[in-house]
Length: 257
Image 1 (tube, rainbow, N blue to C red):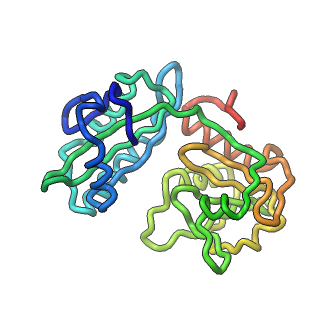
Image 2: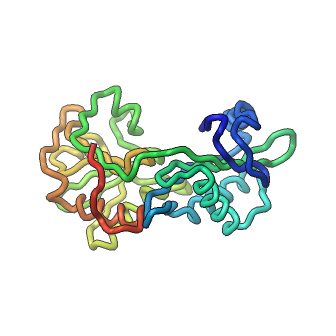
């Protein structure tokens, strides 16, 4: 993320304007795997921001950093406070937040920045041609839809929620886990398995999720079409509960684009 020069960010125990530090060395560190980063989302709640599962995201980021030999002297509660103060200083409510831990000149650095984002959004009637689905989904040459942490994929068939199986010891992703938790809490069956593209034929609903658009419903995928209205399926219940967890609010007035 490249904030503008007037933007306030947190860098190594101090609040700075973005123009006071260079970002090219941060990108350089991440490019050469000298650092770790993640993205969190905040949503409007009672006139202020609510950071979705912030503690979980930050705990995973620190664990990932420590696995790479990077250690920072911050308690989780401190990082939570910094995150909310960052939003306050920049007058942000709906935002994407990016914490970064990286190594430069033998020292570990910590930076966290944010930028304005759209409120909780839902896209529907997506038409995925080959270029689009190959860039969004992780599909093997044999036609298997594999787990993709950036865009976790789901389909509903005969009242069952299916999603690609995650390899052993591979991080499952907080968004994916949240959707599965919602399904289980609502009493819907969930199956995690190796999925071939051909298996989605006859599905009621096909969708993926990410930090930019919380749920994206696919109407056409390759030569398959899915005409059932997702609002008339368990997908509607999943979206309602997911949105409640993300925003801490009742389900109302979400955006469909």
